Image (cartoon, rainbow, N blue to C red; front, side):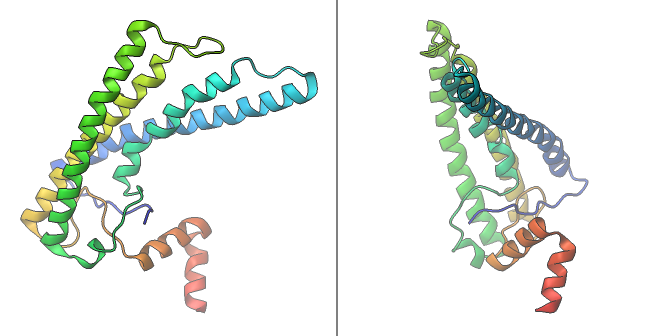
Amino acid sequence: MAGSAPVLTDRSPLSIADQVFHRLESMLNLVGGIVILLLVFLATANILGRWLFSLPVNGYVDWVEQAMAFMAFLGIAYTQREGGHIRMDILVTHLHGRLLWAVELLSTLIMLAVTLVLIYGSSLHFYRAWSIGDSSLDINLPTWPAKLVVPFSLTILALRLLLQCWGYIRAIRKGGNRPIGVPLVEDAARLAKAEAEAVMGAGDSQDIGESS
């Protein structure tokens, strides 16, 4: 299941670090959105140029290939913070308290280990492209910027995972079902209600709930 999960805040050092880091994640997510918007304009120019003037955008495929890394990776840490990645939570929705946060901590540690391996591999891939001057086939765009964004974005994700590990350890120590600085586990009914409110607006959703 995927969707935005609430993240509680307070005045603790963990929450302050979470909110400050979230600003960086939000900025990177915005940059990724801008890249998507620019690609829409580029695709429109390519189609109209080919149709009206038989003059497509030079190197269109190369530009799209390089932009894919920015689109796919810049928002990955933001999505992790919001609890928006697809996950199988049939089990965890039935857990509560310290047991739930222990399971979440274990899964986050596994994700962190995988992310660190990916950072290492993608960094080598970037260094290889930079050192040999690798470029695209059509208009010889350098490929290293797109390959650099992968380890960079994964490093931001790793830092987010470390913050969440801190949050889960704190939750295990204190107990309770409303920890700070981590996405809360929502059941399917609450998630569906939140998505309905986001799409239709809180007022419309409330009217529908009252009428039903």
